[in-house]
Each structure stands twice: as C-alpha cells, then as structure tokens.
Length: 303
Image 1 (tube, helix red, strand yellow):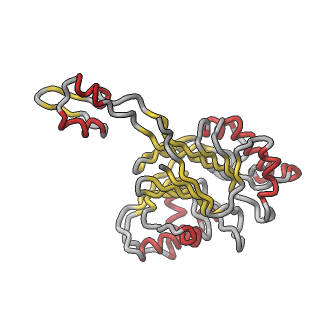
Image 2: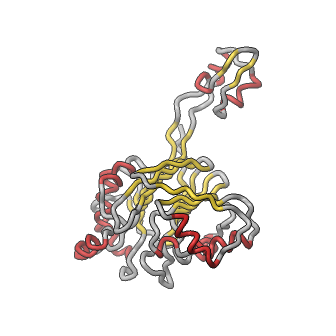
C-alpha cells in the first residue's frame, strides 16, 4: 500500500483555508515529500503525521511557494533529535538555495544529503521508492516527478522443490539474493514468477502542457497536476506565466491514460475550484478537485 496525501494545494501565497503546495507519500515506514511550501508543518499536524519518518524531500523548483516551509521543518526535525540523514533532491542550485535558507537553522543534529541534477531527466532510489524527475516548462528550471513502487513476482514453491533448492535458501532467494551453496549457485529467477504490477504516482506543477508530462505520466495510478485556474478566459494569463488551466491538465491525463486525476496549486483568486468539476469531468471523468489534506491509500492489484 502507498498512502498519498496533498498537504497543501495553494499556489503563490497561503490563504486561511489553504496552505501552499506540498505532497507526502508514505510507504513501508518511510515518508517522501514533494515541495514544502509555507504551512506544510501545520498541514502535517492537522493530518496527524510526524515529520520524523520523512527521509527524502524532492523539489520541483525554487520559487518561494514551493520551498518556503523548509527552514521551519528542518528546525522541527532537529528539535525532535533526528539523527538519520535527510535526502534532498532537486535541480541545479539546490544546495545553494537550501544553505541560504539555513541561516535560520544553521545547526542540525542530522546530515543533509544533496542530490542535484541538470539533465532533462534523472533517477533515484530511496527506501523502496523509485523516483524519476523529468523537465517541464516553466519560467525557471522546473521538474515533474513520478514515484513508483515495484512489486516482485510470486514465489513458486513447486519450482523450488523441482529444482532441488534447499528449503533454508528459499527466503533469501525470495528477497532477491543470489546464493551459492555447496558449489551450486541459485538465482531468484529460478523460484520467482514475473514481476507484478506496481504503483505509480505522477506529480506536475508550474508548467505549460508538454509531451514530457504525457510520456512520463503514462499508466499512472494517480496523476496530480497543477490547475491554477478553471476559467477558460484565463488561458492567456497562464500562457504568459507558464502555468496551466484545469482543462489542460485534464487533456494531459486523458492522453496519458491515468486512472485518476487530482488538481493542486490553485490560484488564490480561485476560492472555489470545485465549481469547475463538471467541466473537467467532461474531459476526464475520474477527476478530483481536492482540498488540503485529501488522501488516498493506493493498493496493489490482487491476483
């Protein structure tokens, strides 16, 4: 199971009823965050989550509404006597930006590990998460992310017996280990069936519609996309500032063949984004216009 929660859904500036953009996923005891806007700590508390299991934070870009909540979060982690490394992932400039913000949090009891990238795409693996960053189109270097959880095939006890594999080795093979026993080498493929379908979440904000979004979101169980405005007459405005209408996000989700679509990064001027749902559903039916704290448990398919 992968738990996904939109902690904040706002863009540009926080509102009394809407925090700035941030996503958190929780899997197997490890939490991953994408962006950390102002109000993220309050959103965590409202949801009943702790910052302690957050092992990695990915940043789409370094505009204030996507990173302004980080200094306070770091201080909270430090005050909780965190000792484990914290991995920060983002495009070029990450270390410089974070160190500038750390003027207010200069001493921490844990190490920050920076993983910067400059390419059009980059891949990372952390605690069972497969993280893929891909470049989108904004006024500054900006990236979307896919978060994938792989799922191994089923263990085939009958095949293991027929191959004469000692029972004591089964567990190690099942967990992907190659084992040599009495001069004989046994590999996981000897006892494991084909990989089963995993889980995939795509997160995109602050971008014009580009083919890279469709290509990378293809087949996602959940796509979370910027929907700065729902009014079609705002198209010239979003084009000028390289943002996206809800309708454009729905078209991308349709082309990518995702299962479900959520929106985020609403303009402060759009106080009731839910009023546009019928228009959006006419393009992509399985859509949600979430508020802060909206979450879902994504389950592996049963076979």
